[in-house]
Amino acid sequence: MTEMSELFSIVCGMDSKALAAAGITVVLWASAFVSIRSAGAEYSPGALALGRLLAGSAVLVIIWLVRGGGLPPRAAWPGILGSGVLWFGLYMVALNWGEQLVDAGTAAMVVNIGPIVIALLGGWLLKEGFPRALFAGLAVSFAGAAVVGLSMSEGGGSSVAGVLLCLLAAVSYGVGVVFQKPALRHASALQVTTFGCVVGTVACLPFAGQLIEEAPAASLGATLNVVYLGVFPTALAFTTWAYALARTTSGKMGATTYLTPALVVLMSWAVLGEVPGWLTLLGGLLCLVGVGVSRSRPRRLSGQGVR
Image (cartoon, rainbow, N blue to C red; front, side, top):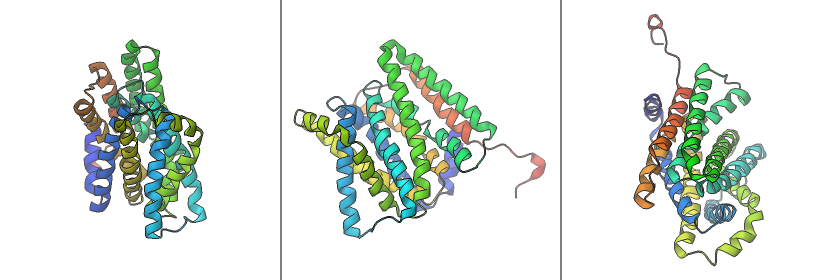
C-alpha cells in the first residue's frame, strides 16, 4: 500500500486546478492504451504515431494561434526539443509497437516504471541524490518486469519483445519529463506542449509513406481512434499534464500515474475483452510496488517529533 499512501499524500498537497488537470490527464492517458491497441490492428507503429501527432499538432496549433500564444523563449527550446523527440516521438512509436505484442493492461503496468526513471535522472542531473529506497524500488520494479516477461514468454519471443519495447517507452517517458520540466520555467504549458508535439511530428515524418499507404485501407473505426488519440490523449492530456507539472514537481506528477494501469485494465476488459493473466498481473503489481518503494521516505525517529 506504499504507493497508495504516497498518491493520497500527493493528492492532498496539490491545489485544486493542478489536481483537476492531473485527473484529466490520467483518465485520457488510460484510454490511450486501449485506443492504441485497437488502432494498432490496422496501423503500423510509426504510421499510428505520425497520424496521432498530426491530429494533435493541428488542434494545438489552432488553439495556439487563436490565443496568440507567441513563440517560446530561447531558454525553453532545449527542453521542448528533448521532450518532443523522446516523449512525443520515440515514446509513442515504442509504445505502439509494444502494444502490438502485449495487451493494453500489461503495457500500462510496465510503462509505469517511468517515475523511477524520473527519480534516477533527478538524482543525477538535478543533484537530488540517490536514496536507498530508490535502488530498492528499482530492483523490485525490474523484478516485476522480469516476471511479466516470463509470463509472456509462453506467447513466443514477440511477447518478450513487447515487454522490452514497453520498457523503452518507459525510459523515453521518464527522460522526456526531465527535459520538459525546465522548459516550463520559461514558457507556458500551451507553448511547451504545442511545439513539443510539432517537434515529435517532424521526428516521425519518416513514417509518412506508411501512413499514406495504410490510411485508405484502414477501417473508419481505426482511423477515428487515431484522430481521438491526437485530439484527446495528446492535445488535451499533454496540455493538462504540462499545466499541472508547472505547478508541482516532476516526481509528484509521475506518482499520479499510479492509477493509470488499473484504469487501463478495466477499460481494456470492458472494450477489448482483454484481461492479463494472473502471473502477468503479479509482475505488473510488483512494478507498481517498486515505484511506490522508490518514492517512500525514511521514517523519522519518534524522539524527533514533527517540525
